[in-house]
Image: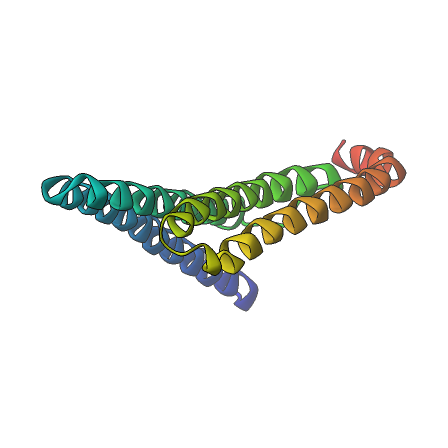
Length: 163
């Protein structure tokens, strides 16, 4: 087996193993959140509400981690190649970054609810999370705009190469 093929195979294997580990950890977060809610329900309503908010955060993080793992599988394990054209790369990256932005927004909102119940003076962290999510969305918008311009310039060349 030539060195290039071996390296490609090892790379795919590494991404596959990392994806399985991330998916297992994602499932672990969901289970942990569920157990925490059950434990909170057995204690008191106040504990249950705190556990529910925490579980939402766990599930959101689990979704983002699972999406990263799914992205690795789709783009690195199954396809195992570079994107064919600018439009394909833009769509794939947009979907990935959108999932991360949604996770950060939801985590920020959950944290706002948690902190506002206990100590409003600690609102800096949830506010920073929400601002970070806004920056991610703005950055994604800038990326979309710039890549759309590139697609218009090189799109016909990419389609001609595919034929």
